[in-house]
Amino acid sequence: MTTTSTAQAPVSLYGFLTPKPGHADELRRLLLALVEPSRGHEGSLQYHLHEQEDGRFFLYEVWRTQEDLDRHNATPLLRAFMDEAPAHLEGAPEGYFGVMRSPYPVTD
Image: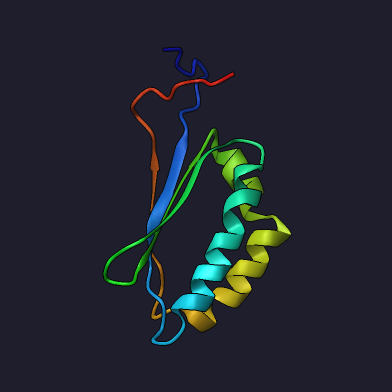
């Protein structure tokens, strides 16, 4: 297994999003619309959406560098999601950010 050898470690963004009552279908649609385009953005290593038994959504992203994540967050796709999502969310997302400390395999 080959691992990354750059000085910058991959960064992760992950968290839970809780839909307002009656808004789960629309929030699911919005979140699913992010998956494939985001996976195609430069520096995307992982981008996954999970649906919990309690109705919350769990989003897990891994980016090669902070700069790649920043570029992704500045895209029209993400800006549009951030504008529309609050109408469907019960409170603020429960989000976490971290630097990946375990080696990440290179798939090149």
